[in-house]
Image (tube, rainbow, N blue to C red; front, side, top):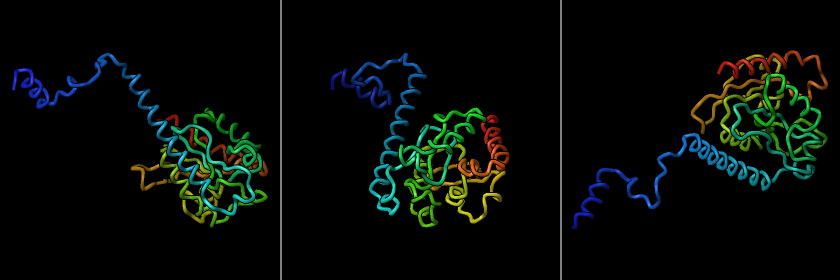
Length: 234
């Protein structure tokens, strides 16, 4: 073995691999640029996983698909700290294929703004992804039918907080028969088998309910302030 080969073997055995790269190493690469690149990779990975969920939902046979126009899955930020979960699409959502775009969605936007959150900074979805006929409340069977798709979304987005909008969302995520009145005003814990952490969760009133019963807006505002306090104390 000549001297050059001996030197290469010495380098390999020493674990100094960067001398053996096919292309020049950029020693002056910005850490910020590296972080942005990593974030882009993670973002694309999340989007790919959500695309898989959307494809699964489209292929999933459900009676709700027969009367609905469009599948409604999510809107917002895949890296959101806060996930908002409603019950099911309404007429406007069914028309556009986007959650919370009707009157209830407009109220939700105002609620977010009241605690200094922008819609594009949070993740918004529903328990059920097809509009039930005549906007009826999803049945327990339908909640269980779509729950695995919702749980997978939570695992992908990996939020710090979940804000449940209405009794259907509270029943699905908290797995409890208790009324929304008994659940709201306090923090709960959501745990996933796929995530090694606890996600703090709060249940409150659905914007559509608040439009019909504005006397509950004060209680809803109290719940929003609890979330705001958590975010500000981070």
